[in-house]
Image: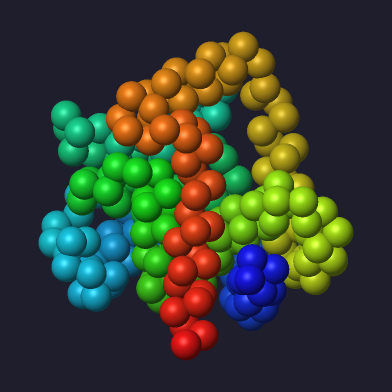
Length: 225
């Protein structure tokens, strides 16, 4: 079933990628206002899920975004100021899903797997191809990694060969970007974030981010019925 989910996501991503604008290097660019588009996307799914309806504040980029990259944290939710902030120095394709993820926290969805799934739903509900692309690439990343970790290495590489070139270019750009920030700061932040999540009833710690695959599988199965 996981392999079938990956196939379905890749098929849909292939169509979406054809509508995404790219820069001179063939990398995805966000051609819409991030804050207003993200808020609209969240309100779109709020019409279907009442717990996600209502007001959403503006989303703001962090001033010292490049410095934030050393922590390898791309989004932050502050319950004290009720704000969602994001690192705008990272590869552009990752920003929309990150922003929607943080906005879901403002509605009380603190579990990372739930926030990732909501971000996916919101991005897919957007009328922006860039947002749709961000959401579905995030889903593909988690799902294919889960397949690989479950022992499906051959299946992973078979699927990799079917990916649109757009995704491969963006993934390659992301790998290159994050390599430069590896070090003690990132390691320390990983430990802190892991401890924080476990202290807040997410026993898998940072691994809870990947549990979104369970929700993606449930959605896929429900659509097949």
